[in-house]
Length: 275
Image (cartoon, rainbow, N blue to C red):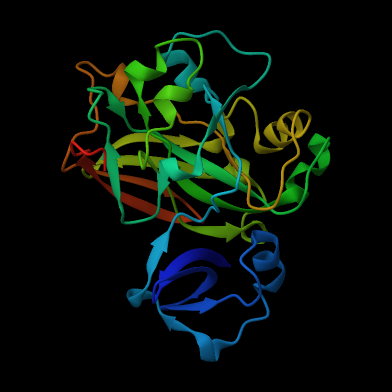
Protein backbone atom coordinates (compact mmCIF):
# COMPACT_ATOMS: atom_id res chain seq x y z
CA UNK A 1 0.00 0.00 0.00
CA UNK A 2 1.22 3.50 -0.88
CA UNK A 3 0.41 6.17 1.70
CA UNK A 4 0.75 9.76 0.54
CA UNK A 5 0.39 13.20 1.97
CA UNK A 6 -1.32 15.33 -0.62
CA UNK A 7 -2.71 18.79 -1.21
CA UNK A 8 -6.11 19.19 -2.87
CA UNK A 9 -8.47 22.17 -2.89
CA UNK A 10 -6.19 24.06 -0.53
CA UNK A 11 -6.00 21.35 2.14
CA UNK A 12 -3.33 18.80 3.08
CA UNK A 13 -4.26 15.32 4.24
CA UNK A 14 -3.22 11.67 4.18
CA UNK A 15 -4.37 9.32 1.46
CA UNK A 16 -3.77 6.00 -0.28
CA UNK A 17 -2.77 5.70 -3.93
CA UNK A 18 -4.97 3.25 -5.83
CA UNK A 19 -3.85 3.07 -9.48
CA UNK A 20 -4.50 6.58 -10.85
CA UNK A 21 -6.58 7.66 -7.86
CA UNK A 22 -5.90 9.00 -4.37
CA UNK A 23 -8.37 7.91 -1.71
CA UNK A 24 -8.41 10.22 1.36
CA UNK A 25 -7.90 8.52 4.71
CA UNK A 26 -10.66 9.36 7.22
CA UNK A 27 -9.98 10.63 10.72
CA UNK A 28 -7.79 13.36 12.14
CA UNK A 29 -4.49 14.43 10.62
CA UNK A 30 -2.17 12.43 12.87
CA UNK A 31 0.00 9.76 11.25
CA UNK A 32 -0.95 6.98 13.66
CA UNK A 33 -4.64 7.50 12.81
CA UNK A 34 -3.77 7.47 9.11
CA UNK A 35 -2.04 4.10 9.56
CA UNK A 36 -4.96 2.70 11.56
CA UNK A 37 -7.58 3.86 9.05
CA UNK A 38 -5.68 3.28 5.80
CA UNK A 39 -7.58 0.09 5.05
CA UNK A 40 -11.01 1.53 5.87
CA UNK A 41 -11.48 3.75 2.87
CA UNK A 42 -14.42 5.07 0.90
CA UNK A 43 -13.53 4.83 -2.77
CA UNK A 44 -16.38 7.26 -3.48
CA UNK A 45 -14.17 9.98 -1.97
CA UNK A 46 -11.29 9.31 -4.38
CA UNK A 47 -9.78 12.05 -6.53
CA UNK A 48 -7.58 11.71 -9.59
CA UNK A 49 -3.89 11.44 -8.78
CA UNK A 50 -3.18 13.89 -11.61
CA UNK A 51 -5.22 16.59 -9.85
CA UNK A 52 -3.38 16.56 -6.52
CA UNK A 53 0.02 17.79 -5.38
CA UNK A 54 2.09 15.22 -3.50
CA UNK A 55 3.86 16.92 -0.60
CA UNK A 56 6.54 15.51 1.69
CA UNK A 57 4.96 12.61 3.64
CA UNK A 58 6.08 13.94 7.00
CA UNK A 59 4.29 16.20 9.46
CA UNK A 60 5.84 19.40 10.77
CA UNK A 61 6.05 17.96 14.29
CA UNK A 62 7.95 14.81 13.28
CA UNK A 63 11.51 13.96 14.26
CA UNK A 64 13.81 13.36 11.28
CA UNK A 65 16.89 11.50 12.51
CA UNK A 66 19.68 10.82 10.04
CA UNK A 67 22.57 8.37 10.02
CA UNK A 68 25.78 9.55 8.37
CA UNK A 69 28.61 7.49 6.86
CA UNK A 70 26.51 4.34 7.06
CA UNK A 71 27.48 2.52 3.84
CA UNK A 72 30.76 0.65 3.61
CA UNK A 73 31.42 2.00 0.12
CA UNK A 74 30.81 5.58 1.22
CA UNK A 75 33.02 5.09 4.27
CA UNK A 76 35.84 3.93 1.98
CA UNK A 77 35.49 6.87 -0.42
CA UNK A 78 35.62 9.21 2.58
CA UNK A 79 38.68 7.36 3.92
CA UNK A 80 37.14 6.80 7.35
CA UNK A 81 37.54 3.93 9.80
CA UNK A 82 34.68 1.57 10.57
CA UNK A 83 32.62 3.15 13.39
CA UNK A 84 31.51 1.40 16.56
CA UNK A 85 28.28 3.44 16.83
CA UNK A 86 26.04 5.19 14.29
CA UNK A 87 26.84 8.81 13.46
CA UNK A 88 23.57 10.65 14.12
CA UNK A 89 22.33 14.15 13.28
CA UNK A 90 18.91 15.80 12.99
CA UNK A 91 17.03 17.49 10.17
CA UNK A 92 14.05 19.80 10.36
CA UNK A 93 10.84 18.91 8.49
CA UNK A 94 10.83 22.24 6.62
CA UNK A 95 14.18 21.36 5.04
CA UNK A 96 12.29 18.88 2.80
CA UNK A 97 9.95 19.13 -0.17
CA UNK A 98 7.86 16.44 -1.84
CA UNK A 99 8.02 14.67 -5.17
CA UNK A 100 8.22 16.78 -8.36
CA UNK A 101 8.89 19.93 -6.32
CA UNK A 102 11.84 22.28 -6.65
CA UNK A 103 14.80 21.73 -4.35
CA UNK A 104 16.47 25.02 -3.51
CA UNK A 105 20.23 25.37 -3.88
CA UNK A 106 21.27 27.77 -1.08
CA UNK A 107 22.80 30.99 -2.39
CA UNK A 108 25.56 30.88 0.25
CA UNK A 109 27.17 27.64 -0.95
CA UNK A 110 28.98 26.40 -4.05
CA UNK A 111 29.11 22.80 -2.84
CA UNK A 112 25.50 21.62 -2.76
CA UNK A 113 25.75 17.84 -3.01
CA UNK A 114 23.25 15.09 -3.83
CA UNK A 115 22.54 12.13 -1.53
CA UNK A 116 20.18 9.25 -2.37
CA UNK A 117 18.87 7.44 0.71
CA UNK A 118 16.36 4.93 2.04
CA UNK A 119 14.16 6.43 4.76
CA UNK A 120 12.23 4.52 7.42
CA UNK A 121 8.92 5.77 8.82
CA UNK A 122 8.00 4.73 12.35
CA UNK A 123 4.52 3.28 12.91
CA UNK A 124 4.17 3.03 16.67
CA UNK A 125 5.78 4.45 19.79
CA UNK A 126 9.25 3.00 20.24
CA UNK A 127 11.51 3.21 23.28
CA UNK A 128 14.31 0.79 24.20
CA UNK A 129 13.42 -1.47 21.28
CA UNK A 130 15.41 -4.68 20.83
CA UNK A 131 17.10 -5.28 17.48
CA UNK A 132 15.14 -8.51 17.04
CA UNK A 133 11.82 -6.67 17.36
CA UNK A 134 12.71 -3.38 15.64
CA UNK A 135 11.05 -4.00 12.28
CA UNK A 136 7.72 -4.46 14.09
CA UNK A 137 7.82 -0.71 14.76
CA UNK A 138 8.16 0.29 11.09
CA UNK A 139 5.12 1.69 9.27
CA UNK A 140 6.87 1.81 5.92
CA UNK A 141 9.69 3.04 3.73
CA UNK A 142 10.24 5.92 1.34
CA UNK A 143 12.89 7.59 -0.82
CA UNK A 144 14.95 10.55 0.34
CA UNK A 145 17.26 13.02 -1.38
CA UNK A 146 19.04 14.15 1.76
CA UNK A 147 21.44 16.58 0.03
CA UNK A 148 24.07 18.65 1.82
CA UNK A 149 25.87 21.99 1.67
CA UNK A 150 29.34 20.48 2.11
CA UNK A 151 31.14 23.68 3.10
CA UNK A 152 28.64 24.44 5.89
CA UNK A 153 28.81 20.81 6.97
CA UNK A 154 32.54 21.25 7.58
CA UNK A 155 32.31 24.47 9.58
CA UNK A 156 32.56 22.45 12.79
CA UNK A 157 32.17 18.91 14.08
CA UNK A 158 28.35 19.13 13.91
CA UNK A 159 26.69 18.49 10.52
CA UNK A 160 23.54 20.46 11.36
CA UNK A 161 24.25 23.70 9.43
CA UNK A 162 24.99 21.88 6.17
CA UNK A 163 21.92 19.71 6.45
CA UNK A 164 19.04 22.06 7.23
CA UNK A 165 18.71 24.76 4.60
CA UNK A 166 15.05 25.41 3.79
CA UNK A 167 13.70 23.09 1.09
CA UNK A 168 17.15 21.68 0.34
CA UNK A 169 16.15 18.01 0.54
CA UNK A 170 13.25 15.89 -0.65
CA UNK A 171 11.26 12.89 0.55
CA UNK A 172 8.60 10.78 -1.14
CA UNK A 173 6.79 10.26 -3.39
CA UNK A 174 4.93 8.03 -0.91
CA UNK A 175 5.40 5.64 1.98
CA UNK A 176 5.21 1.98 0.97
CA UNK A 177 3.90 -0.01 3.92
CA UNK A 178 6.21 -2.46 5.65
CA UNK A 179 4.16 -5.51 4.72
CA UNK A 180 5.32 -5.01 1.12
CA UNK A 181 9.00 -4.81 2.14
CA UNK A 182 9.61 -7.58 4.67
CA UNK A 183 13.41 -7.27 4.43
CA UNK A 184 14.78 -3.71 3.95
CA UNK A 185 18.32 -5.09 3.60
CA UNK A 186 17.49 -6.53 0.16
CA UNK A 187 16.72 -3.33 -1.75
CA UNK A 188 18.64 -1.57 -4.52
CA UNK A 189 19.19 2.17 -4.13
CA UNK A 190 19.98 4.32 -7.19
CA UNK A 191 20.72 8.04 -7.54
CA UNK A 192 20.56 9.70 -10.98
CA UNK A 193 21.72 13.19 -11.85
CA UNK A 194 20.31 14.47 -15.14
CA UNK A 195 19.74 10.87 -16.18
CA UNK A 196 23.29 9.73 -15.31
CA UNK A 197 23.52 7.02 -12.70
CA UNK A 198 25.79 8.44 -10.00
CA UNK A 199 24.95 6.17 -7.06
CA UNK A 200 23.95 2.49 -6.92
CA UNK A 201 24.16 0.04 -4.06
CA UNK A 202 22.31 -2.71 -2.28
CA UNK A 203 21.05 -1.86 1.18
CA UNK A 204 22.93 -4.92 2.41
CA UNK A 205 25.99 -2.62 2.31
CA UNK A 206 24.64 -0.66 5.29
CA UNK A 207 27.00 -0.73 8.26
CA UNK A 208 24.16 -0.30 10.75
CA UNK A 209 20.96 -1.96 9.56
CA UNK A 210 17.46 -0.53 9.87
CA UNK A 211 16.92 -2.71 12.96
CA UNK A 212 20.20 -1.58 14.53
CA UNK A 213 19.37 2.09 13.91
CA UNK A 214 15.94 1.75 15.54
CA UNK A 215 17.47 -0.04 18.51
CA UNK A 216 20.19 2.59 18.95
CA UNK A 217 18.02 5.67 18.38
CA UNK A 218 15.21 4.42 20.62
CA UNK A 219 17.77 3.99 23.40
CA UNK A 220 18.22 7.77 23.68
CA UNK A 221 14.87 9.16 22.47
CA UNK A 222 11.30 8.02 22.09
CA UNK A 223 10.22 7.51 18.49
CA UNK A 224 6.61 8.26 17.60
CA UNK A 225 4.41 7.37 14.63
CA UNK A 226 5.46 9.45 11.64
CA UNK A 227 9.03 10.00 12.79
CA UNK A 228 11.60 9.35 10.07
CA UNK A 229 15.01 7.70 10.12
CA UNK A 230 17.29 8.38 7.15
CA UNK A 231 19.69 5.47 6.78
CA UNK A 232 22.59 7.20 5.00
CA UNK A 233 23.86 7.66 1.46
CA UNK A 234 26.14 5.29 -0.50
CA UNK A 235 29.35 6.06 -2.39
CA UNK A 236 29.30 8.18 -5.54
CA UNK A 237 28.60 11.59 -3.99
CA UNK A 238 29.61 14.68 -5.92
CA UNK A 239 32.21 15.83 -3.40
CA UNK A 240 34.48 12.82 -4.03
CA UNK A 241 34.49 13.11 -7.82
CA UNK A 242 37.31 14.67 -9.85
CA UNK A 243 36.33 17.38 -10.48
CA UNK A 244 33.55 17.58 -7.87
CA UNK A 245 30.04 17.37 -9.32
CA UNK A 246 27.65 19.50 -7.34
CA UNK A 247 23.99 20.32 -7.88
CA UNK A 248 23.23 23.46 -9.87
CA UNK A 249 20.15 25.23 -11.15
CA UNK A 250 18.42 23.26 -13.88
CA UNK A 251 19.58 19.85 -12.62
CA UNK A 252 17.20 16.95 -12.03
CA UNK A 253 18.00 14.47 -9.28
CA UNK A 254 16.18 11.15 -8.92
CA UNK A 255 16.21 8.59 -6.14
CA UNK A 256 14.94 5.16 -7.14
CA UNK A 257 14.44 2.24 -4.77
CA UNK A 258 12.94 -1.00 -5.98
CA UNK A 259 9.64 -1.89 -4.29
CA UNK A 260 9.14 1.80 -3.45
CA UNK A 261 9.39 3.94 -6.59
CA UNK A 262 11.19 7.05 -7.79
CA UNK A 263 11.50 10.47 -6.17
CA UNK A 264 12.18 13.22 -8.74
CA UNK A 265 13.15 16.80 -7.98
CA UNK A 266 14.40 19.85 -9.84
CA UNK A 267 17.10 22.21 -8.60
CA UNK A 268 16.62 25.96 -8.59
CA UNK A 269 18.73 28.75 -7.13
CA UNK A 270 17.62 30.55 -3.99
CA UNK A 271 16.64 34.10 -4.81
CA UNK A 272 17.85 37.15 -2.95
CA UNK A 273 14.88 37.08 -0.60
CA UNK A 274 15.84 33.57 0.51
CA UNK A 275 12.89 31.80 -1.15
